[in-house]
Structure formats: structure tokens, C-alpha cells
Length: 199
Image (cartoon, rainbow, N blue to C red; front, side):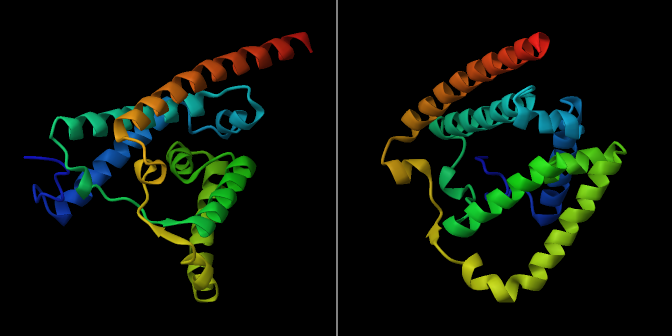
């Protein structure tokens, strides 16, 4: 049976929810093991003192990208059936900025806030309540901002489509970028630690 399993009918909606639940539990477990239930550790990204979040999340992205790429090359996965979120450029830029500001101020993103709540952190609970307030507020405001929300639609875009470069070449370029990013993160952490020790 080829992947994606759901699209090829290996299991239905109910089993899909079970799989999603189990994957979510696993994801939360590894986030907690990496220390991502602490707002201090997460906020340290923005002070360049601890770039663990960058390194862990980039590693996960690279691993998933390489896995999907090689599964498609080997004929195990049909990439045409993998769902891609449509691009709505302007509202997604604004949403990214709002999420980023919330991350800086609150010290959590939605996923890490869930992990923080599960481990009993009050600050994460406050932010978690704020997330639901934001979701509710968005629902109430949607009729007023629906025009902007659905603006600048580009459909389902991929980097090969945008750049015209082969998929494999882009995968290789992203891996090189990741390696450079990891080396840069290590250098920045050491430099910040030296400054802290001197000052």
C-alpha cells in the first residue's frame, strides 16, 4: 500500500482521528523532553542565549522533508495526494507577525502552550486561555475582515513551482542551509556565553 495511507483508503475518518491523537501525544512528549514546556527556554531564542528550539525544530523539518522526498523517489509516497495549505500571502504574513509577537511576549507558541499546561505551568495556562479568546474573537470578527482574510490567494504553492528549480536540488539546498544554521547557532550561543561570562 502506498502513502499517504488515508488518501488511499487504508483507514477511515475514525481511525484517522485516533492516529492524529497518538501522533499529537508523541509530539507533545518529545516537546516536553526537549524542555519546550518552559517559557524561559523558549524566550531565550529571542535573546540568542539558547537556540535549542531553532535546532530541534529545524531538525524535525529536515527529517520530515528528507523522509517525504526519498519516499516519493522510491515510489512509496504519492506527493500529489499530500495536502498543501493554500497560500493567502498578505493575511498569512499578518498572522505570522501576530503569532510571532505573541510568542515573544508570552514565551509560548500554541503547541508548546499545550505542553506547558499539561505539565502544570500557570503562565502557559494563561496563554492557552488567550489562544481560545483569540480564536473566539477571530470568529466574531470574521464577517468584517473576510475580504482581507481571503485576499492575495495564490493557491497551493511549492518552492519548485515558485523557483522553477528541481525538487531534489531544493531539498539539497535546504539541507545545506540547515547545516549552516546549526553551525551559526552554535557560534552565536558560544559568543553570548562568553559575553555573559565577561560581563
